[in-house]
Image (cartoon, rainbow, N blue to C red; front, side, top):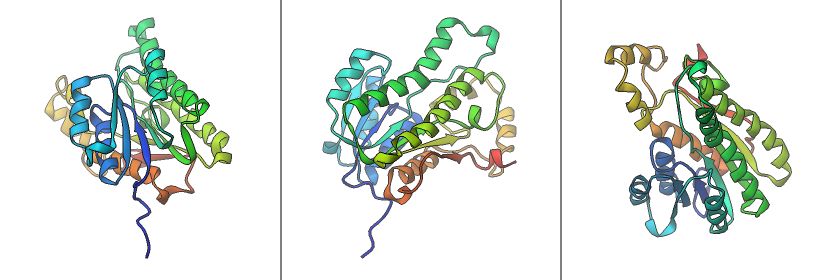
Length: 252
């Protein structure tokens, strides 16, 4: 009898940035596919809401804290069991031109979106928290990796850096059968997108959606199901690549 290659049963998976948006949906769907989860986020209330939506609540653990805090990172990692999968989704978006970027803003965006991801993976590997045959998934963006967009240069560069890091890391970890891939979404209907809507007219949003061949923005589930694929045995021979989930935007 053939088993489901996309099942995550008996897999332990860490998901960062799980308190909202894409990370929240990846956590929900991963639990639906049978995974036992370790989820992190900085907002206590929102992370608790994510936890309440997971299947089989007794199988999961949540950790509230900032991944740029070295003490939290050390304590958090020490409480993890060996992992079959890691989804690195934590990140922030700040849209502004170069002349408006203060040193503090640059350090914050690069620190959260790029440096904290490297340090987390480094410490997970050093402490042998990532198992052989595991899958590591970075949530990046079409901005920086594929296209450029006005006022996105800092955010885009932090995500593009992750893409380059992941590609070489896939080569480094291949001998341990650890796979490393990225998912690069286009515009996704999340809480972050709603903040943008507050400053842009409905007409402009509708016109922007028409730039996508599928004539809409994506939903968090669209990225979550791509993550399920990369975390599962269905992608056991896929590493060092980026899966673009953008409604056809970059195909034009």
